[in-house]
Structures are given as structure tokens and as C-alpha cells.
Image (cartoon, rainbow, N blue to C red; front, side, top):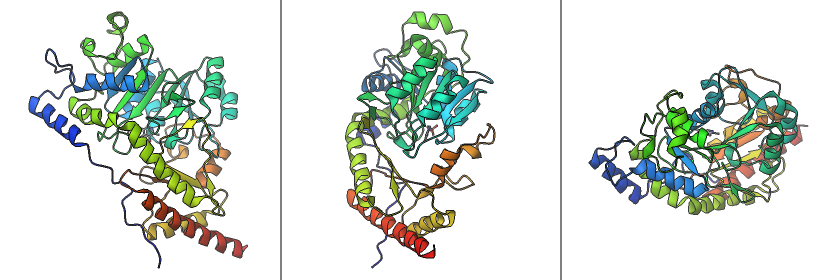
Length: 401
Ligand SMILES: *Cc1c(COP(=O)(O)O)cnc(C)c1O
């Protein structure tokens, strides 16, 4: 019998009952705007910022309307402006170069390795080309952050981390988002916390945080924040920074706070799913698993593998055959962007460099979500399906040679 998978790759878990109750409470109060507070109640958004700062060990945290808004706010807060080059890894998602372009700056893409992280040897050769690196921990893969920070520190390059897929993850025990000057996170539905849309930025820097708060649209109400610097930091910048409204509201914050409390537990469940996928696909001829270094404390909410140096027709055949059995694989090698998947050469507003190593990786890269509604048995079944279809196409390909 041919096995089929019938689950949904886009079905997330429900919002915890505690979050639903807190959201209803906010709606009953009518005070949805974060600065619509009453004495004795700082509001859900300010409380969430305090909780998140504590969770990642940051001095300051700002909640925003999206992960993209967090990155744009961070870039503005550190003074990136029109025409400035900003280094970023070539394997990322559209909101990353989009954030750079939104402030008029220009993405300078850096090659990625077969482990799906920025190529640090190439970064070293390009480090003189910019004073900022927006590093995207794409699909949760974390590079050697100790070496990356050494390279950037030596060159005087400031680092913003895009932690859309690494909330709750670590490198060498340091939370993702806490290596660079600013860490940015997303709480969009497909990330590690779900408020539909939303984001955070964290930093320890008084000036950057004051600019970010004013820049996000605090008016002169910044004193209501619980995870922000003292008044002096704001006095210097409050009339200088343009207001680009991108605040979070109390309704979303209310559903996020209970989720944040279970982030670690959810991370363990994601990793159990990931390991079931990895086990099921190990030693499949023609298929390369992605290396995960010892120092990387990942939270694997998605799974990737490579069909390196395969013919395009054969990769397409694997995708089609898996889809016919209910397994949705996203391929990063397609010339045209599809759904959430796009690649550096589809972002036509920015210069497209030659990146042969990245091209080779993307041409063989297959990607899938691992929603927490899956069980480890689901993952074992998905892996059996992928394994059998990859093997069938691989064997046919070899017989044809
Ligand atoms: C989702 C995502 C973001 C931010 O997304 P928003 O939808 O703006 O919250 C940033 N970087 C990567 C790599 C992402 O996947």
C-alpha cells in the first residue's frame, strides 16, 4: 500500500485558553491602544515587553506591528539611511531586503554555505563594504556567532539579528538576538509565537532604544514603557526622530503573554519533530541533511534538506511525487517566487550579484514547515514518503546515466 500524509502543513495550534480570556478582557475594557492605560495597570503591551526582555536577558524590549517593522525600526534607530550599504545573507526571506530598502538603503548579499548559514570566509572579504550587517538566522540555522561577532567587531560593523526563526534558540548558551546590537523577532502566525502579526526588538543600548521607541510612534508617552531606558535617553532624541507608527496593540499582547511562558516547552516539542524527520531521512542516497553544530541550541519549527547538484527536472519530480502523497515541499530553486518562497535574484529593486555557491545551495534546497499540530509519528511517515520518492527518482536518474 502506498502511504499518504493527510495532515496540514499550515495548521497551527489554537491560542491557549488563558490568552483568549485575556484578549476578551482587553476588548471588554475598550482599551486596545497600548498607551490607553489607567493608573495601576500598565497594559498588556508594556507587560509583554517586560516579560520578553526578561526571557532573553535584554535590558530593553519594544513590541511592534510585525517582524519587518522591527527590522526597519532597528535600522532607522541605528542611523541607517538612504544609499547606505547593508550586508545580509543571500538566503533569507523577502521582509529582510524589504526592511533594508524601506529605509532607502541597499542590500549587499553574502554567500551562504551548505549548512544554510552565512559564509564567514566570504563575509570577511566583504566586511569593508558596509558598517551594518543585518544577519538573518534563516529557517533557524545559526552560524558560528563567536567568529561572526569577532569579524564584525574587528571591522567596526554593527550587527542586527533577524531572529524570526530563532526565538528561544541559543548559540553557545547565549540567546539568539543577544549577540549583536539589536535583535529582531516576529510573532506572525508561522513563527514561534502567534499573534497573527507582530514583532519585537531588543537591545541593551539606551540611545538605540530611545530612538526605536520614539520612531515606532510613542508620541511623548514613552514614560509608560517598562522595558525602556530612563528619561535622559529620550530627552536627547524625542524631537529628532520621525514617528513611523508601527506599534503593537494590547489585544495581540494579551494573546502573546501566555504563549511566551510555554516557549521553552514548545521548543522541545519542535525539536522532537525535527529529530524524527532527521532520523527518518538519514543515509538516503542523493539526499544531504543540514549540519547542526554542537554549539547551536536550535528551535526547529521547519525542516530543510538538500538534493545537491541534482538535475532540475529530477528535483521537480520529487516535489510533484511528494505532493501527490500529501507532502508539501517548498523548493528554493524555482526561477519565479512561489507563495512565501523567493530568492535574492527575485528582489529586483536591489542589485543582483553573482553568487555561485548560494545558487548551488538554493537549486537543491527543499523546505517544509513543522507545525506543532504534527506528531513524531506524522514526521516519521512524512520522512518515509520523502525517502521513498527521493530514492525512486535518484535510482531512475542513475539508471539513465
Ligand atoms: C517572517 C520573517 C520575518 C518577519 O516577518 P513579518 O511577517 O514581517 O513578521 C523576517 N525574516 C524572516 C527570515 C522571516 O521568515
